[in-house]
Picture 1 (cartoon, rainbow, N blue to C red):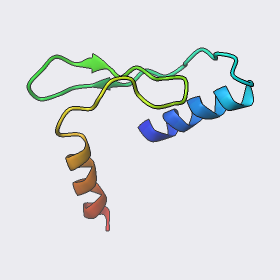
Picture 2 (cartoon, rainbow, N blue to C red; picture 1 turned 60 degrees about the horizontal axis):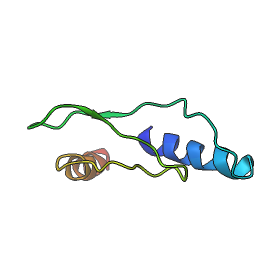
Picture 3 (tube, rainbow, N blue to C red; picture 1 turned 135 degrees about the vertical axis):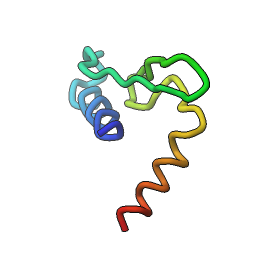
Length: 67
């Protein structure tokens, strides 16, 4: 779902001929050793903020668990 929101944001910008579109999405990251924080979107759909450790490695493990 997170990646899909990024694609939707990029497509909205592309479809509007670069006119900024209000972002209807909020993503919060809850790291194990720090305070939760909002993952802010750039206009191209990518995130301004970085995921800390624990996101991508857990994501990869879950993909393998599905196979």
